[in-house]
Amino acid sequence: MGVKIGLLVLFIMGASWTCDAREVMTTSLSSGETMISDVSVVVLQINHQEPEGEVKGSEVGRNENVCSMCIEFAGQAIEYFENNKTQTEIIRSLHKSCSRLTLFEQQCVTLVDYYGPLLFLEIESVQPGDFCRKVNLCGQKVIISPPVSEDKCEICHHAIDEVLLKLKDPDTQLDILQALLKACDTVENFVKKCKILVLEYGPLILNNAEQFLESTDICTAIHACTSTVGVVQALPIESETLISAM
Image 1 (cartoon, rainbow, N blue to C red):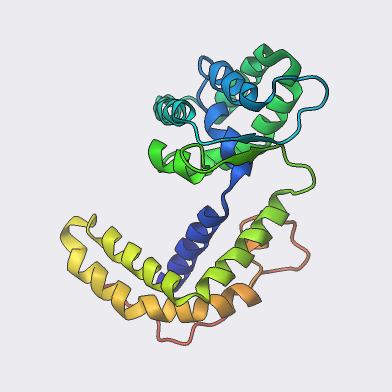
Image 2 (spheres, one colour):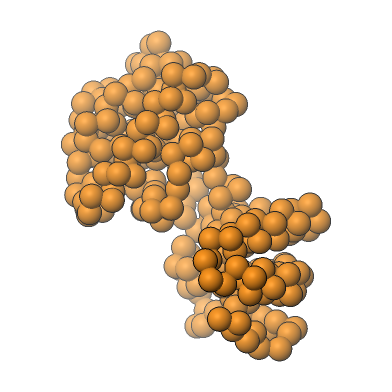
């Protein structure tokens, strides 16, 4: 069980590495009915001086105002979510807000429908500043464009490929272990035991992760892809069963 949890952590971290400009509108759209109009118009107007016809991918340069707005709106969006508004209510509010964008209404609705479910996966734990840096609104320029041919299944497979690539990098493995050790500091009464588990089983998990991901259809297991086989089976880990130290 411990190994499976460790692999899930690796997958999530890998997925976050692959998050790029496709998610950049997520923060804007998740900011609630009163915020989406302002931030969307600002971002779209940066390089859309002639917004006629179909909206194409636009580049947003490093801009302190956009960064500040992203952090502020992301913080408000998280607070908005914590006020127990349901996902359906949030999507409905965002659709209503999209109508204010006039020429960009359809593109806005498309982005809400596509990125909404992805947003809800991380909104409970994401920090505004970290999120805005991750989507490059507080960094180098990004490209904003609605998804054309990629679906959840393709994105998932791309994430798995990126994870496998990262796992072959010794520096990345060290970074992962350091991150896990740092996370142990938040486990009040079990910091020492947590770090012992990380040091003892972390390298083992990393060594088996590559083989596991190559032989197991993770994307089907998490329902990102339609199953074409009966049951997804995990590759046995070359280790004795983990014994909880708690």
